[in-house]
Amino acid sequence: MPGRSGRSADAPTGVFDTFARNIEVAALDEHQFVHLLETLRILDDAEAGYQLRHLSTDTLAAIVRDASKEQLNALEEHRELRRVFLDEIFDRMSQHFLPDKAAQTELVLSWRFSGGNGTGGYDRYQTIIEDGRCRSGRNLARQQHTTLTLCVADFIRLATGNANIATMFVSGRVRVKGDYAPAVRFSSYFDMPKPG
Image (cartoon, rainbow, N blue to C red):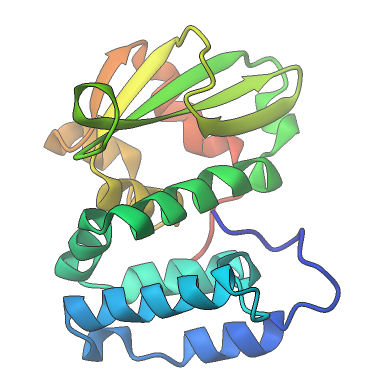
């Protein structure tokens, strides 16, 4: 969840957000969509002043809302962009964490993303909520309470407020191993974006 805070003072956030919000995502085919994201990543890698983290949460959510299933699937299939987006979302989770909502919660949630390079063909991340704090990242080697398995495109929709976890459970798009309750309550511990 790219955040509303944590930006450097000299970051061109307003300009970058305005640019991103004015892109007609629906006018792009899936290859053009991926090419646009590759260009943004290249600017980031070159330290050219524009970075994915400069996008506000609401702008990223709007881009995902406007993206077609084919565009998000193409993002998921692009190994480099897939990792960039997953890392970005997990890096930002702590910025959107609502400690008051999770005051008595201790949870280790493991995420498995199909089509990955890791063990068993999955990319693996964990989110740990304890002592009123949240931290997330690539497999943090903690014993999990719950494991969620889903595709990257669905996770991106979920993390940007463009999908509902309960609906994904019912439709079988998310598989749960372990306790269901933490998975159902998980999004309530975060200030979720409003893509509308």
